[in-house]
Length: 474
Image 1 (cartoon, rainbow, N blue to C red):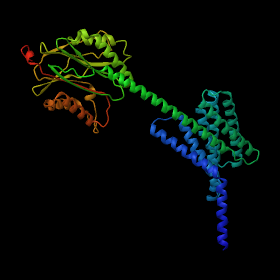
Image 2 (cartoon, helix red, strand yellow):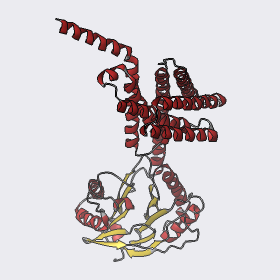
Image 3 (spheres, rainbow, N blue to C red):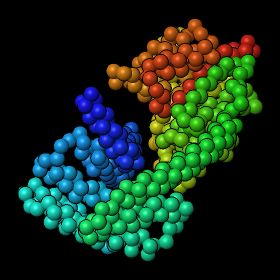
Image 4 (cartoon, rainbow, N blue to C red):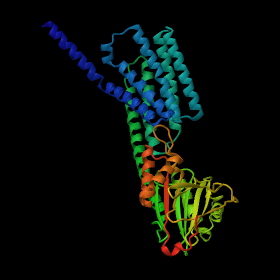
């Protein structure tokens, strides 16, 4: 019976200690959890942030210190010299990430950095003194004096600078409350009075940090939503500058496929129709991705339209486009391929500017046609030349951007030119639309993710009966 009474009294004592430490234990758990969440967030971002890193270590160490100071811990772990020295080392160490964090906030400027370095070096010396066996009471008093001096200086700097934003005001208010209670606690302990107010200030600081984090998250979400809306508008604008439909006629059957890597792309294509039934086809690829490349692509359209009168002369057309882009492309380079299909003469005229070669499928064989000059927007007086070939009924012409050739699979193998040639041969039995879908599907299946913009343009030459009499053999 007496054993049962003793057990009940022991349980009551543990319960009383736990209730007395409820808030302290809650703050300790929240602090440690916050520290590990911040560390996990930094690992996911794969980007080191000094402010977040110091805050994480401060939160973890401060939470561990609160736990070691709790009555529950003292009940579970009997006091010993080694345990006391270990706890003292932790008490001294917590000042290092704390002051590094405060210093990273910019409080105090250059003088503040000197203060932070002084406190950190002093804390390291105190920790070494603990391990060397110096008097814990003397070292504790020295630490209190150090924290008092550092905290008073931080308060002075915090009051001297006026907050610029609401978030900064909230953060600084929490910082001031915490530092003030740290100062109060250390002064009280130095005077021989017990003080347990410090962790209340830390709890307030955590709440302020949570408020600032929530506010910034909401602001970031709003900015992200606005950016997405702007990108959607940019995408619609870019799609509006592309041809609405392929220019199929009695002589040509054309299919195009265009897939941007992001909302907007640096790939561009255009058709130039001649009054005599001729067809000009251009494919261009602006270096880079996203909005900058898309803006330059819109400039390419304007430049191409300004050279429309040269549509039958690919070399002159590319030279004119190049002159229009030079000095206006903001260091972006442009590759392009342009072919003019002359139904009246039954011939093609082709010129390129640093672009992958055009492919011609004729009688089951693929002919690579490359007549490349310098990439555009680099030198205003670059010279381009044209290649002329006869057209035969059934010829299939393929223009594309390098995004078709460069996808890499899981084995680090590039899709490459040879696979594209094989696909072009295999697609001979398909219509241009079916062939374009087949090639684009194979390229997409080759790589797990799209790494570049993709553009394909396929044209079959099938002249009307009245045109055959004037055809020139290839």
